[in-house]
Image (cartoon, rainbow, N blue to C red; front, side):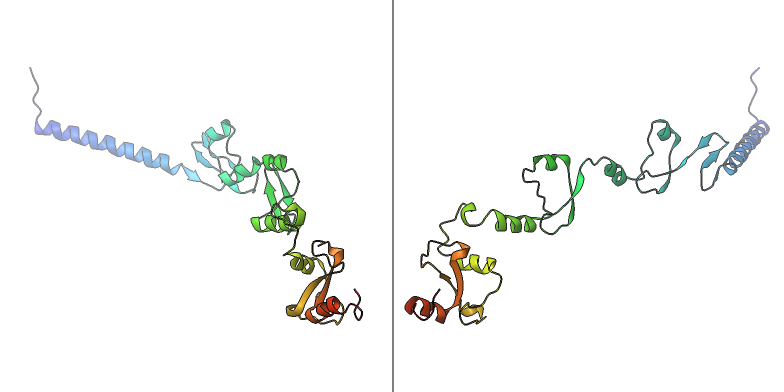
Length: 208
C-alpha cells in the first residue's frame, strides 16, 4: 500500500532538515573559532602551519606556505630581492666622474680598454680628450683651423706672454717657428693681437 505525503509528515521532515542545517552551521562556527591568527603562524587544528621567515636579502619578515617550503621556495620576499641574488657581475667606478655603476660579466668581458662610463656624456668626454683629438681623429686635417682651441685647452694660464693682458677676446696663438703646419704644443704661444703683429713685423723689438 502506497503511503501518502500528508502535511504532518512534510512538516516533520522539514523540521528534521532545519535541525540538521542548524547543527551543521553550529559545527562550522565552532571550527571557525578554532582558526586563529598570531604573529608567528596560522594554526588550524594544529595541522596547518604558515611558517614565519625572513627574506635572505632584506631580512623582511614574511609568511610562507608549507607547500612552498617543501619545494624549497619562500626564500625571498619579492622578485626584486630574488633578482638581486642572481646578479653575477660587480660594481665598478666611472672613469670620468667616479660614480659607482653595475656591469654584467658579459660587459666586463667585452671591454677591451677596461674603462667604464656611467653615461654617454662621460663616455664622449673621455673620447674627446683621449681618442678623438689631433691625429687620433678620423677627420683630422693637420689642425690648421683648430690650433687655437687646442692651445687654449691645454695651456693653463690664458694671458699674453709679452704684455700680460688677460682679455680672451684679443688673445691669439703664435707659432714660434712661423710654420702654421707645426701645431705641436711646444711650438704654440699665446699673444694678444698687438704683440702678435709686432712679433711678425718687428722681430727686432720682441723676440719669440
